[in-house]
Amino acid sequence: MNKKLYELPPLPYRLEDLEPHISREQLRIHYEIHHKAYVDGANRILQMMDKARAEGASFDVKAALKLLSFNIGGHILHTLYWHNMAPAGRAGGAPGGRIGDKIKEDFGSFDRFKNEFTEATLTVEGSGWGALTYCRNTNRLLIMQIEKHNVNIYPTIPIILVIDAFEHAYYIDYKNDRKKYLDNIWNIVNWDEVDKRFTKLT
Ligand code: MN
Picture 1 (cartoon, rainbow, N blue to C red):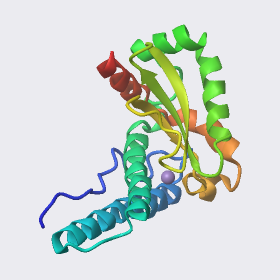
Picture 2 (picture 1 turned 180 degrees about the vertical axis):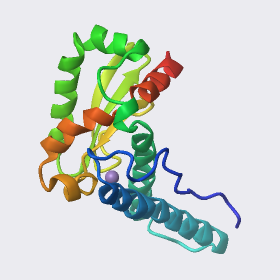
Picture 3 (picture 1 turned 30 degrees about the vertical axis):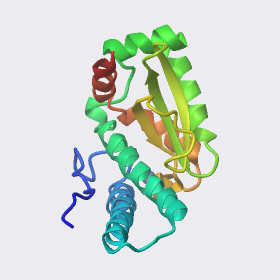
Picture 4 (picture 1 turned 180 degrees about the horizontal axis):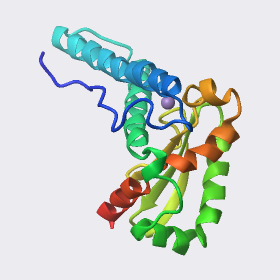
């Protein structure tokens, strides 16, 4: 019973490095408490299932799988999110590279993309995410709204940029003003990382 489990990955910067757009305290609670809870939650279910299988015991399959997809989704999305942000000195602005060209080709302009993406993330029902994805079949960038961590995902279409729109991502800094958080987040989007993810797919 020594199977591998999920681990909370280290952040690619210090807790205070995203200030003033995301405060140290906001990032600390988000990372150390919320992200960790998804890692622990996924591992708890995996271990419960391992144990039940080893003992030949039954468990509530539907409930377990629902919780597992929520927690694994949360873990994977937060890991993408931490890495597609960077301190404002080396992030923000308009993207260059191949992703910059592709955004212009598919959306007309970066501003148009930014507005559509912001609207998508602003209007996610309840808690969720805005995501930029790339469909290899049609060679199109697609914006995706992800409800919770696991609903409305298009299978096999990979994510290249995510913005967390759970209240826990912004409430300490912006209270209930999701729009203000989204307006500020563009200052710390790490376009080099997004370009790397896109280039790897094309
Ligand atoms: Mn979150």
